[in-house]
Image: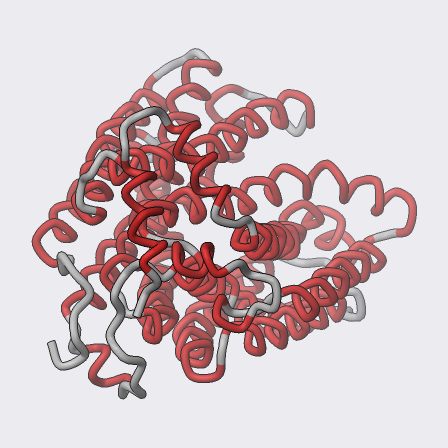
Length: 444
């Protein structure tokens, strides 16, 4: 039974009086959960540094090993294959074995795979390393979502999700800032070894500091009661086939598959678009400043999107309705990205793309929180891992579709930027009708 103290804590947080008062009230019950969130934030940052480094070093590596454009495409393709497979396998494993052990070994293996890049001498060697890296890095988001589901009540999940997902954009900004220094001083092999060493540092903190809420030696009773306000079904071992029959599994998988590839579009095609449209060339300052502005906005969107739905929940709105309303507002903001392809003004395009990518990250914080709201915690990583696998496969096809559209339209991005907002409204409609409004029993 939940201690009666929690029934006094929860209402006090939903009383009108401003977000600052709510945050102070939440912090008063304990701060341990924010320490757990910091661990997964840094894991996400590390994950993205390891992932993004290859793109930064591509010109050097292509010259060193005589890569063709097809070699580079195949190297990225095998990363995505490993990523898709890893999502569903590791999501299931996290639910069965536990987030602490599985995530520890996943980061250990992806750090070793990162370091092994420094020993590769051919495109084939890099394909093997990237496949293993994708397979193991896929554990990151199922583990982060599982940690958030275990450690945060519904009213804080979107904020927590936005914070750890902001590590994606932090990694995207820091990679091109730090890698040139290492490359200049020690060479590309050392760059991969340094990133592997960062993984070793994180492993030390995770192994010593992470515990599930009920096992943590220093969590306060008031914080544990606050975290565990929601009534949960009894944990049972559920066959994967039964999870695939749950309505909520497909609600998330299809909606996430429609929108997650948009971020891959920004990642792969934004620099070529800016270069082609505004003749920026390869000047780091000219190209770098617009990208830094765009990814900084993405960070604000990631955290701000979580604050909005958490504020609505604090005002008494049902969590799932609060997520859906927030997602509708962010989908409306994304419409502005259509301006990017048609303007001759660089900074107007940067503004439109910044608004679109910031709203995308806000959308992501809420769709991840939404699936947490209606999924029992002992099935959380399995459901998220399956949806992540579907989204990763969607990302693989997205790359091919974009290539065909640009070839057919002589590198005209107008159709692509026009299609982006439509994906969110289709996904939102699907979620509105398919998402469960409460945590179901397994037999549902």
